Length: 167
Image (cartoon, rainbow, N blue to C red):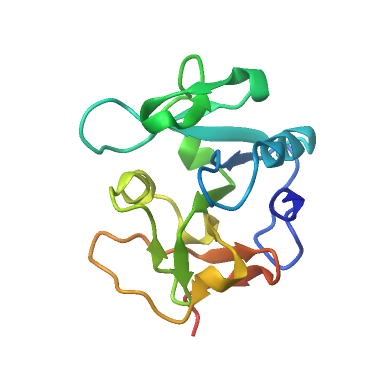
């Protein structure tokens, strides 16, 4: 799954040394923990989400320092151990790879339903938001609600980056 980490042509421009917010995939989500290593070895600083205890709330973020830095967190998700990043770190991200079950050509993303990501990315520039999906998960239209945060891009193995919301 290095297609994610290699940041194919045609997408947002990201310079080496930049911050990339990513995720540790679960279930059938695209990606592997190896993609995090490829990003890190490529000179990027990688932020990963941490889920706080309690009701759904914005995600907290922490720096990825290699596979040994991951531990099982809430819901069995792998997340960085140690202290979180500063509250401004997510705003400093040049790119945010967002897991999705599906995304439509208008940028509407279908997540797992609890709203953790929508609460966390409402202030992030849409041009930085990339829904990572498999080719058949990029669809023409999904239902949306007022709290859904649109993605600016999709990233799939077959099409690479695709600009969303410009139809």
